[in-house]
Image 1 (cartoon, rainbow, N blue to C red):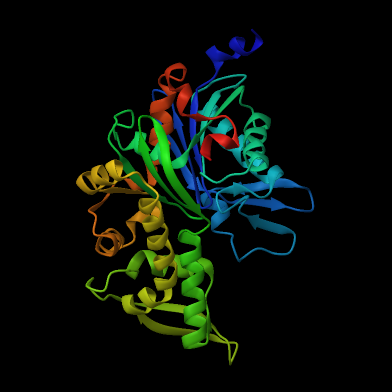
Image 2: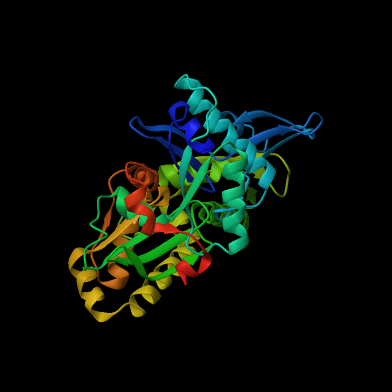
Length: 348
């Protein structure tokens, strides 16, 4: 009864809270927030000084009393208090812009496939503490499929590979449920670390994560036949300790990311091996759908397609596919209840 009192003052939200980025969808308005999942906190006063883009600019540049941190690691909440503060900031920002008072929204939030009961509860508690009156959880690949307008209720098989900053979720969906799946703690952030390690080992230069990510986005490629592009990068020379600039190219980054790419492809193969033959036939005909920000990495669709001999396509605007899916679910929460994750056994 009391919950319904807040409904007129609140905007229902769909949230994709990821390791790298948090996106918020407002019912009837669309995506209103797309910012990095980074929070900067002043430890002297224990209050937030920046969230999102502004906080990300502070990474690696802060004095001792300011900590710029990502409250999620591999797609799950690692720092409950910071995650709660970040979510509260975004929820309040949405309602501030829509001139709502006493915001107590219903929230649909996407989570990785392999979360434990404790991790699932941490997400729910963080969202409730941030101001939500109801929380509904949905698996990220399911949300991505809905966001891509894939007919998930059909009896045909559809395969979705969602590659985020901290996790890669692979799922075969049929009749509104997940038939076979795998989730690995490997994503775009790990590719950044691969690049840092490669440049350190081959050029004796230490890069920052932001520099590595910019190189990955601008010249990164995982397919041998892609055009080779060059770029200059700057870091600290490990021998002299002084700044140094070098030229690298797509070939270097392809070598750096090769092991992680092989792990992703191997897990896609394992899911296919554990999928019923009739659904595999459907997947072969329909192809695999790629979502997540890392799906934009040049040549990734061609690389996976060649390795498993199945067509692969990138979902339109893959970075927002998951949050678009939560937004579609928001339109009719009552009829979507079977899609929600209520306990860990739902995914096993």
